[in-house]
Image 1 (cartoon, rainbow, N blue to C red):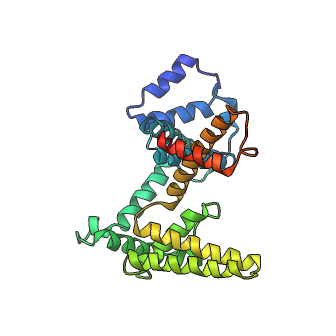
Image 2 (cartoon, one colour):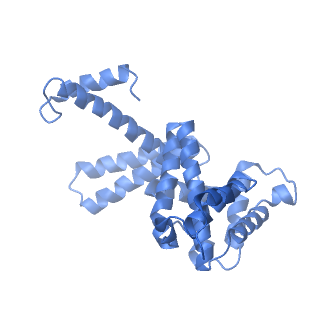
Image 3 (spheres, rainbow, N blue to C red):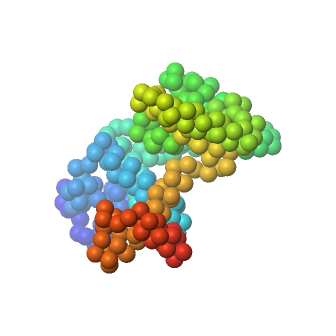
Length: 277
């Protein structure tokens, strides 16, 4: 097969009526004759790390509330999904049209209050209904048929805990209000404190600390705050302020290792006063 000239390859993309269509057309050109050698050799397996990376970059842009970065990173993710769909089609795993048709059908089935009954069931009712319908759908593995379902092994622990807590809460296994979740957090912190005060094996301390973290996740759910995003934000904020401390110490020919805690505390407060967030 002869290789089309570059100008005609771009024209092939531009003739698509919709921007989303142009994304898929671009993926086909990159995989086709005269395309990119790297793109041509990718497989569904080799693309997985890039899909994960692009997803987290979107998450980061949302956490930073950076609209320009969000548009760019979401565009990268859209292309990656389209490219992965094309490679999946070539692998025999189904076309993008089949993927899209399946998800549209599934979402319509799981929203009967929108497409069938017109019932006003509220947000919690919609979540409960979703989980019940998902659990009752045939052909699911036993773990997925549990109320708690199953999570991908690579999902961050905070996100996993949040989703498990959300699923249990959807069927009524939760505190009646935020006060109950906060009281449970206080209880778990107290238990951890008691274990720290006596010679406790590390595995037991790890368990108690895990209980505290899970209680924090529960509080986050009542506050409707994503704990993964909250912790990412705090870590980023700490990093920026600590780098300010390092820079100021460098001007004094010092490092954090040679400075006193009092010096670093003062610079930390200075960073806060300067609005470093």
